[in-house]
Length: 198
Image (cartoon, rainbow, N blue to C red; front, side, top):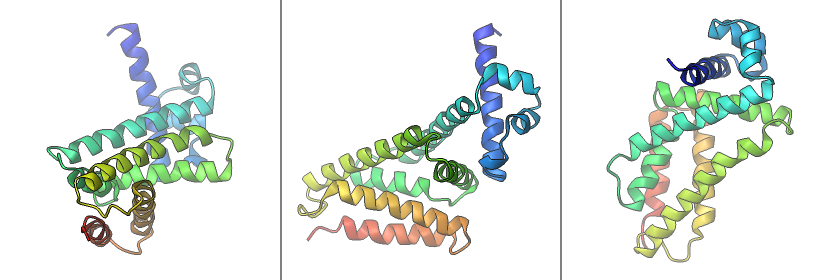
């Protein structure tokens, strides 16, 4: 194993330890010492690879985003039509299985961190949702041009509303208000309404 590969493997090991703590206990419990214990390495090693906790948080957040991206790509699969792509992406975000529940809980830990200390990660935490919202709006515009969505609809507002709804549904699943199947049924209802041409 080359030094560069070993360096990246250590960084991944430490960042994933932080993500496990975020998922199970929240980021308020993710001290550098706790991350070292979870990763099975020394505190000195964590500090060597990540000189600041903010650096570790950002690295782990990037890795979490990559995990969500990989999940989306699997769910999109063979989807070609904009409606299929939008449905796959929004459905895969809902916490309906172990992987999506872990991802949703971990993102919730980051949101809580930003709410409690807006200066920490604020800009970085806002970037992936904004990119996703833009991608969804583009898919909705393509569906609109194909006559699958009412031409009077504002696709940017619709994309923002769909993401906000999925985030709210995800919170309601994690909070025990409804299960994943019910959340998925609500999403499906709204997508059917959206893609119903006048």
